[in-house]
Length: 381
Image (cartoon, rainbow, N blue to C red; front, side, top):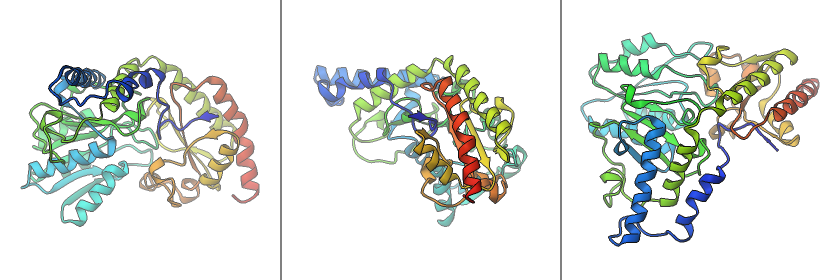
């Protein structure tokens, strides 16, 4: 099998699995317990917190709160900001956010909150000027992703945070779920207040993530119960999961593999665009403004789901866009926001490479894909 869907999820790394194993088998103690073995388990959580803080360039480990994943982290950031500032009812976000942000903001809009939706242009870049004019005294939070999960386009979140800080008292939340482990992050050098990650996007397990909460930011808890996570998230900690996200964070701090991943992505992308007629890159062609592993290509006058199925038959796993939307038989909302024509949008395929991929796998896809597209077009699919 060739797996080119690493933006959907990644394979758990063997070192990560082995790190979490003892906490499923023998080190099963409750970290809130007063006896020594419980205290040792609590220390394991704090070690993991330090490793995640190091990955994100946090000023100190106490800025890291563990969650169940990116969706919870995103929801907590936005809902917490609104609860902490009840006099403010304004949210600013983009039209190309992950559903964890977009659908929450749509719901809040239905409930009477004011949401400003920032547009992107045809290459997926954000209109920064509209951000400046949208900020006002009632803006509670600006929530903008670092890397788009479909196109891989990087938004200038450091610049955005500076603009927000200079022009308002709003909090800045960044959905970093698809960026962590792929590009270097140094939050202490930014004005970003809140930053979401999810372990399964960087070779950790599903079901655990984290929210960076800058020192001094008062973010109310979404849960009521015990005093876990420094009183920020009640509930007995899933120690094995937390140890695993720490191990994964430590593993992916080494960014050197991303160079070869970028080279493989470029080889795949360039070959597809050169050899398959009416193939179009979605998003900027400037590779420095995209994740190094992502290529989102439309094959005009075809159906992405049919392409996906044929590639699956050939043992190649890809995506038509966000895995969270794969059951929806409509064009990607991201491509709609970019004004990609319908005939192209419906034939979009996302290739997202990872640390386990090889150059020979890229060559196999380059060899197999043109025939699939040609045959589908002949059949009117």
